[in-house]
Length: 86
Length: 234
Image 1 (cartoon, rainbow over the protein chains, first blue to last red):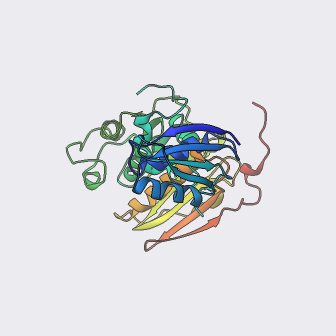
Image 2 (spheres, rainbow over the protein chains, first blue to last red):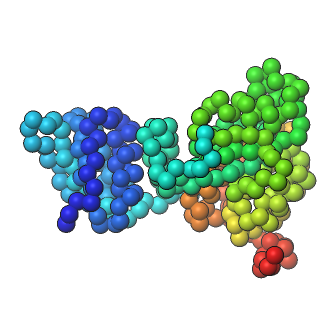
Image 3 (cartoon, chains in turn yellow, red):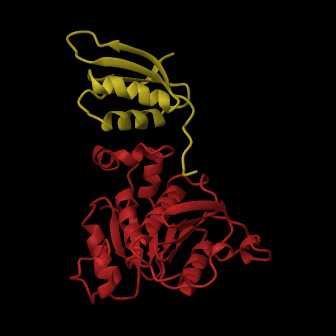
């Protein structure tokens, strides 16, 4: 599986980290993969969890090679989440 | 504010609507549909004010305020007017107040002949509400109608093809609106945002809000109502 898009989000904070991840995923087809780079701490703890809650698959989470600081997270787009009020 | 919606959200728009972009079912395409919408709001009194504010903050592209009356002293306590506007045309005063809230939304008094893509009706009388809703239905535009009644009331959501407002409206006029009707208008604006942003996902339905508690049920077409007839060629 090849990665369809790579987005560096290390300079963003919550909620923009996941907002931008969500927009990037929206632009992909189901099953395509997105690579995002996240800062240590809250971003790498929260974004993969939010993606999983939205129905996407967290393929891997690994440290970026030095001297870069941060994490590479690989996501696979799942089916779109339903919307609207009940 | 340009008249042409962007093909993708830029950083300023993503930052502005970040929280809304996280709502389940919404996203970039939904936000772009909002940016491309021309929304007519019928009524700009104290009941309609929260809906007008919500629609601006939600990012509809063009908001048309349709109200022929002037700002009354009773409007001064609403969410939109400060009191200094008493005596001014409501549509004009509302448009000015709303335009200050966002540079990404165009707000104007409703122009004669304007063709909206969606309508929110918060008219002060049942007859005006029926008239405005019927105009939206005939134009094929999704619309939501607010019926204030004291601190509560009802809203009727009408996507294209659903039972019309006349099939689902209350009989008679409600009590004069109280401040709690603000929640009703905000709910109506939420419904309209969903109709625009996620077409096809919101059914025809009616919310009744009593003492702050909302119940919802599907709307049902009245036997023989013209809204069930097949459209005829123009």
